Image (cartoon, rainbow, N blue to C red; front, side):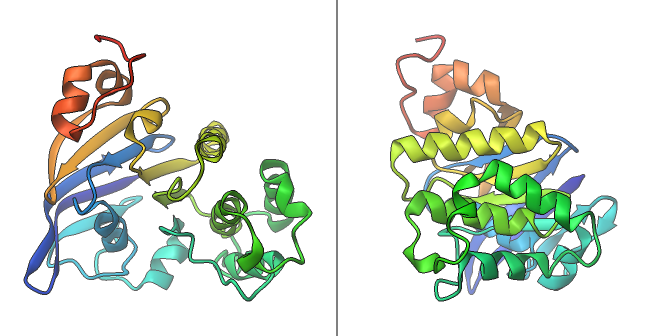
Length: 243
């Protein structure tokens, strides 16, 4: 569904990502993992047209989208849940969702998607008239994901969805992501909680200093403590296989 080939993106003289290639098949959850500053969020920004790549191509559903503006990319069916949510804090939950729905452009059944949101995120039903700026961290993340879903995307890009959340809320957010995959969503996720993401990611790319260091299945990377430590610079929890 999504293919990135030879992507290089610069901020001034700094190469944030260099010759990155990855792909995501329909129905997959694919994770991009790595330390802070590795270039993970830059990959998503480049895919969505928020920054212009210096070279390389991005293809979505067989169509080249490199160089298109963000609005056009959203219209084609890519939805982004940005890092730190980026909600309109002075607008209500309802109005944030209405803004998300503006990107549908006639795709799908709006009433059905609204019903799905209330099923996935029941807390939002009770917060519809509350200003988004007064939501808790977990509620705000639910709204950010709901705002992307209401735009009827064919694929979701999630940028650090667990950032700033308490551990119990992190698990709740990851449970939501699992449920989205069960409902047929294709997902590319950038995340720092590597070990937890590998519980449900089909495949993972490890990014180091702007380049792909390795690709593996989520299960293989999670169970092989030596790989986990070598490529992520982290110690896998004691429950990992191969300890």
